Length: 109
Image 1 (tube, rainbow, N blue to C red):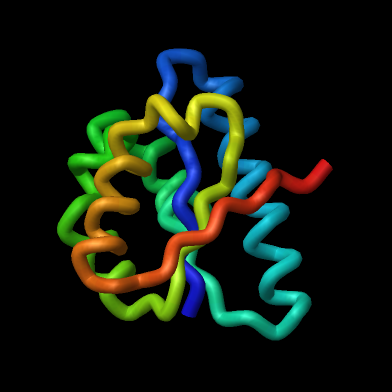
Image 2 (cartoon, rainbow, N blue to C red):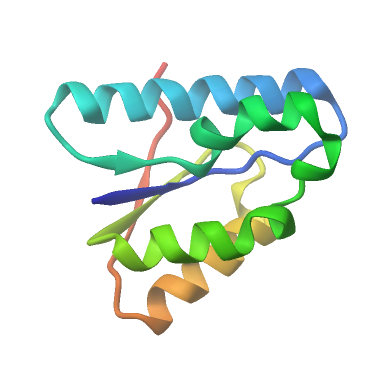
């Protein structure tokens, strides 16, 4: 399974939404190609509309850790802000600690 890491948290809702849309497009493409993929952003975005406490990555750490440990590799979606993302830094560290290969992928246009 691919674990897709991508930035999400931002004070502007339209940026959060555009990041969600980019993760959704990439996840959809991978599924069309027959790849099993998990995106915390695709999975969790709808929940954040119900409870703003679910926007920061800390709210999802335990859940995402379990999913990441099931992954055969992690793809980093290099959207603007990915290098500054605390969540992505954490996910990369967790992947490396567990010998999970890390790949960097461009967002789809």
